[in-house]
Length: 196
Image (tube, rainbow, N blue to C red; front, side, top):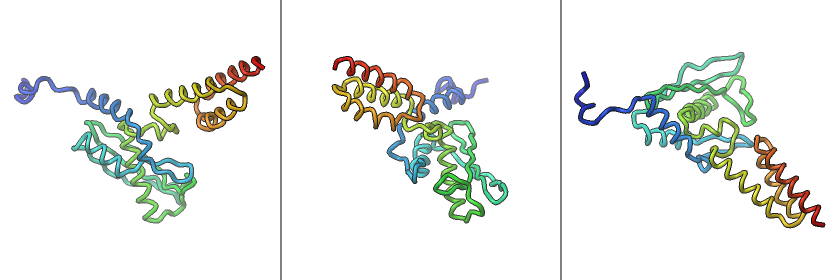
């Protein structure tokens, strides 16, 4: 027998479908302006991530699980329940070089817990690309590559080509798209050399 609320509101959307829709929606958000950088590491602001989570699911909750010790280092865990799905992230208590800290103090553990909360929220889509080592969401990654390719293709001299290639290479060197970028560079270099 159907619940009266279902009859009044129509057929409810299954929870799994809602989670998939929300994940896709949150995963498209560019969070770059909310990233905190320390040395070469990127961190999503936990306060902003919590705000966005609660704006999208006011019933969302999180819970820190008991931490685990490995020798003298600590691993923290955080479970976030949102959109009817529970996801758990873990994070070691780390220093500014991304190395586990021996015998961390309470401030260091608290910092790791907040970063772990942001990471657990990311498992629901918001800023997940940060943890994949990427700088931009997938749609913008294509735009970034296309912008660099256009600059290379419009270079009118070898010097201009080299000047455009240097920052493009630095930005893309650790990404799979670097092969395509180098191919464009080599083709333009050949074309400019043949013109002379």
